[in-house]
Amino acid sequence: MSLYFRAVNPVCSEQSYGEVNQLGGVFVNGRPLPNPVRLRIVELAQLGMRPCDISRQLRVSHGCVSKILARYNETGSILPGAIGGSKPRVTTPAVVKSIRDYKQGDPGIFAWEIRDRLLTDGVCDKYNVPSVSSISRILRNKIGTLSQPGQPDSDKPAPAQIQYGHVYPYSPYTGPHTGTRTGSGPAGHVGLPRNWHNFLGIRAFMDPAALPGSNGHSAKVEDWTSVTSRPFPSGINTAEKINNDPDFKYPQQTGYVSACAYSAPNQYGTYGGPAASYMNTAHHWQPQSSSLTPSLAPSLAPSLAPSLAPSLAPNLAPSLAPPGSAAPLEASDFHITTSFKLSQREEDRKPHRLSSAS
DNA sequence: CTCGTGACGGTTGAG
DNA sequence: GTCTCAACCGTCACG
Image 1 (tube, rainbow, N blue to C red):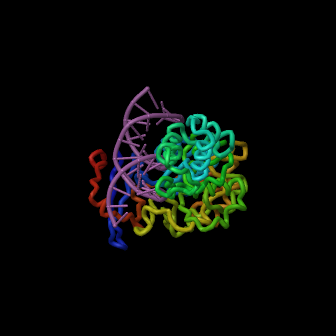
Image 2 (cartoon, helix red, strand yellow):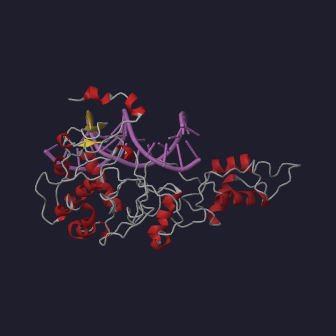
Image 3 (cartoon, rainbow, N blue to C red):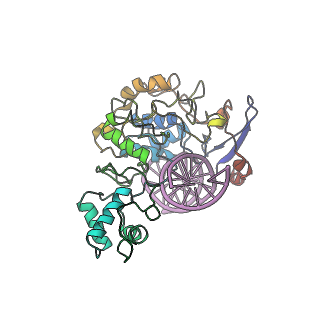
């Protein structure tokens, strides 16, 4: 029921859009709130403001406030999860090789037995072990010819049969958090790493030294965990690159922190760019502890000041900022100094939500 | 009135 | 370059 919102950039004369929610806040459907706003939500909550009041002040739906706070409470991170991409595959070369070995050693072995052995042998852990059906498929499709008469079983990778060039090369890491969105942290919590980049993030979390040189994988911004900057001393996890990253999705509008300060057209839709200074070291698997619910105001301000100043840092003071100084996302504030560029696809798309606009 | 949650329509990025 | 798929997003409505 949000008001679909389209405007013309007075500067660039390009079409732009946003949508306005019931509270008058501007948002981009499908995209995360700007980090300054996410941060502000957490700040205000830490300062004792009720979620409903935060919702009203920042003009963010209470559902969103609730989600962000819940996420923060669970993970210690204000950052959104990794958007897009594919899940890591469990049928890594190492796993397939092990399955092959098991099958060779005991042609009559059952898939469930293979699964058990993958676990007991430490090839997989309970989070990335293939399902029985996956093992069966592997046996059938990739190793199926293994025991067939006249088909010599070669240790050669049999390119036509074992095709896992697409698999994620994360198998070398067999730590306890490998690969799935479970792990030691909050079970099933959103935003857990699901691709190889994020596995690097895991390593970064567990061993920050492993990260900085991690061989040039392209970090995407949603891979919050995959790149690191210095962590917040208190343990809060947020981005330092919130405002100063030219690639950031919602570049800071001068003068106020607002979700309506969206990115330039050529940046829309991407968090892209080297995110080396963007992320935090902590990630969603970080165990819950008291350190995850730090006192925000004193701890956050020093870290955020360089990137959020001047618009946000003042609000990090222990006292609440004057109403309206934070990030009221009013439609009227949607200064189109930057704009959303509608792709052709978007141009073709009907703003169907218009019909429900008030 | 507040808040948790699911449905919804949307974006994103790896394969 | 395009498509598919499965992840994520915030809003909205409901209880």
